[in-house]
Image (cartoon, rainbow, N blue to C red; front, side, top):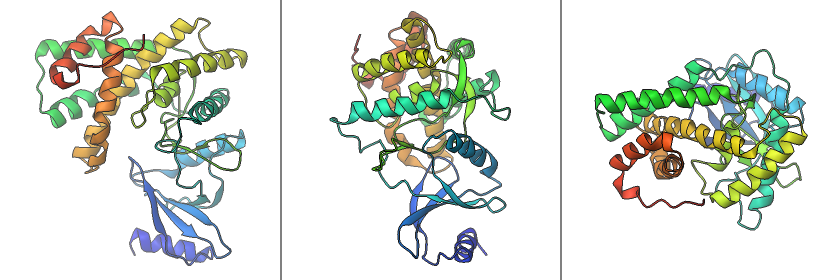
Amino acid sequence: MDRFARLCHWLADLGIAAEPRPASADASFRRYWRVALPEGGTRIVMDAPPEKEPLAPWLAVQRLLYGAGITVPRLESVDAAEGFVLMEDFGDLPYAGNVSPESAHERYAQALGVLAAMQALTRPDWLPEYDREKLLAELRLFPEWYLRRHLGVTLAPSEEAMLERLFEALVARALAQPRVFVHRDYHGRNLMLLDDGRGPGVLDFQDAVWGPITYDAVSLFKDAYVDLTEEFALDLLVRYWQVARKLGLPIHTEFEAFYTDYEWMGVQRHLKVLGIFARLAHRDGKTRYLEDLPRVRRHLLLTSRRYGELAPLRRLLERLHPEELAVGYTF
């Protein structure tokens, strides 16, 4: 019996006879289905193959967040051995592509409020550290998958040495930041618009770590999938920084220091994202992620032109993508 048949059999045992319809897929091996209930309404079924996507981290973070009042899907049934979960359906309206200009400020302010609440959670013993090894491994996806595999570029030894120095500097800055709960993919595709006054629904939280306080703000405002202006982000970041200080979060007492950390954290994340998107396309056949590469490169160019220490990265990006030289500044 294949996985889909086993999934349908499991649902039938729960009294759900309707055939699951595809709901969504993500960058992992998980798949999501929508099922209609006999009494009306719908639910989402997550299929997480245990050998590829262990369910335990997802369940542990779900219970932590749900218990703290964060709007994550309510669980209705779990088969941990098979990797099946029946849960609340948050609908089909992620922030990405569905937040209107008129409501954007309110929606993103709500998302920052949820972020601050997550960051205020006490650290569980099982939450993995976002440590040096993990940060470096992510950065090395950039030369391996983006430069060599996607662009077909072989760097000169001097450029390889430059990247290693840059990686060490980025990791050192990340590790020097105050540390909190980090969702790790807190962006417009994982925040859902809900119509019941609960604020954004939060998805894809299973990779949470204990790491740099600016990381999730980077994911939100330097989004790989959504165009947000720097003016818009800066206004809300100032408000978030003020709220975080009032909540007693371990955040810099000077906004300028916080913002510099945010900028440098963005470089680490976006070099990683270029590598991941290239790997998804060339290894996994998920070529749709290539459409978002220009946006990610723009984020990198903007930041690398603002800091002298990042000039070697800027020169490399401009050499590889001369067509993208016309990138404007906000400040």
